Amino acid sequence: MTPAQKERYSRHTNLSEIGEQGQQKLLDSTALIVGLGGLGSPVAMYLAAAGVGRMIFADFDVVEVSNLQRQIAHSTERCGELKSHSARQTCLAINPDIQIDTIDEVLDETSLEDLVPQCNVVLEGSDNFPTRFAVNEACVKHAVPLVSGAAIRFDGQVSVFAGHKPDSPCYRCLYSGDSDTAETCAQTGVLSPVVGMIGTVQAAEAIKVLAGFGKTLEGRLLLLDGLSMEWREINLRKSPSCPVCAQS
View 1 (cartoon, rainbow, N blue to C red):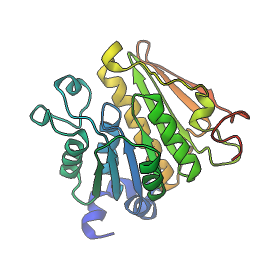
View 2 (view 1 turned 60 degrees about the vertical axis):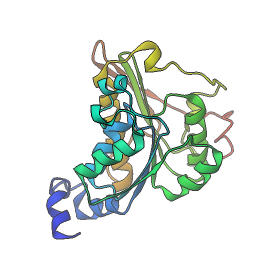
View 3 (view 1 turned 180 degrees about the vertical axis):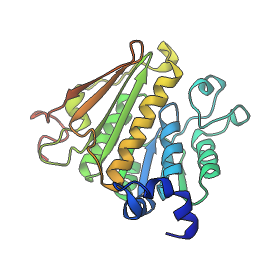
């Protein structure tokens, strides 16, 4: 690391679990963030601050006033701009020492086939099952860890999936149906800090995955009840009938 990097990341390198070796792993890593909304905003900002060397922001939507209640990577003056571009500006202002690429179209099987193999981790924060399923399938196929988060109303959930491993479940083991609909925050509302809480957990899990320390949420689903401010955990198992990873 350069002297400037050593200063910037000193609070990481002071941690024995990370050190300079772990920080260098972050600098050498690539992360794909799918969705730069309520979840993707804190994910992107914390991974930028942490020094993940290359990030790919994928979001085709534009910033609207109603987003600003929770999507903290954006600002009033950027309404009408693409979210991926707005988040890129915010993250480069935090840390100009990293590379950020943007994808401004809907991700499909072809684009994921190109993007996912470039990555060391994928973080998913979209609001629809088709995207979640497609991202999961690409991650399983290319053996890339997936950090998945979701939040609505006062509730949230987060887990780490490594469905390419023999005994590890993938996202489709949790949601095995063919649902093509999902409730959205626009329909039902969401308490703004809840998406931040889930997004920051996603960021922390991604850093652990990339730097190789601690125990991740692989095989565990962490659930937040924001009304009572209680966390609970569910153990996940690989489904023998999963359409994606059962033969992996």
